[in-house]
Image (tube, rainbow over all chains, first blue to last red; front, side):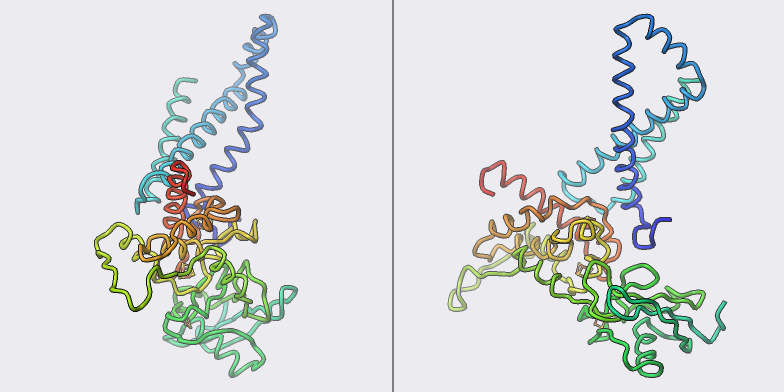
Length: 112
Length: 240
Ligand code: SF4
Ligand code: SF4
Ligand code: FES
């Protein structure tokens, strides 16, 4: 459980950003490895068949979600640090997460 | 469940390796957390150590951790924090505990010094006053940050202070932001250098835990973001 003093939107946003970043650090090497297999046609075709599996599709969607969350959260932070301050920080946190959800939803619709 | 006319309070006793002791105190219609702590000290255990002075939210000496959140206890009503009649009161986080609810504030104020959060006049009292327009950008920025009561609530709320104990922290950096915006200071770039040094504003993760908990609604995250921007601009201009 998140401790009482950390239970507020700014900290949730920080956690999401940090955890999505860490997850991407582990995910991306796998991604590049798969791209690497594209050089070998047989292996890539085999891999492509594997991506039809629903669990793999779920994994793909999760990867897109991670990227979207990390990207929108990162843009929010850049705006916070480099542009003049705005009092609407909580609304911006909600907006950046909402945008990531939209991207996730769009991708899920494209998947099915 | 506690009786309606009674509070059950767990109070930290001893130094860092201490423990919680349970007290029961009468519940009153109009009662602050500090009232309850004072009641315990007067009626139950006179050896209880804690700090307060003004009791009206001005001096900044009464901050403690109440049910997990750092708060000014003299202006925190029991009805707000202990609806079920239970309270857990501990010393502030991120500072050495002397005893019971009293922390050593020396490291906190040492950081103010390191952040150069101190006004140094460019002129003497014999010189004419320098006019500062109340509408100027700098004056308004300083205004928004200047009413800090040095309570260390933000310092206790900040995780980066916990992770990196030499980090200057929200209060000292907020103070440096005031000094940086004070056009009468004789060496404002010294403030910016101190605030942007190794353990300075660059460490802030913009969690906003400081702003979330500051009892006088100061926003140290905003001040720190300002220091980061001013530091970057100065760096690009070659004047940091
Ligand atoms: S915004 Fe910065 S100073 Fe405030 S709690 Fe977070 S890390 Fe600490
Ligand atoms: S900025 Fe707010 S929380 Fe921090 S020391 Fe000053 S008054 Fe207390
Ligand atoms: S006792 Fe002075 S601020 Fe609480």
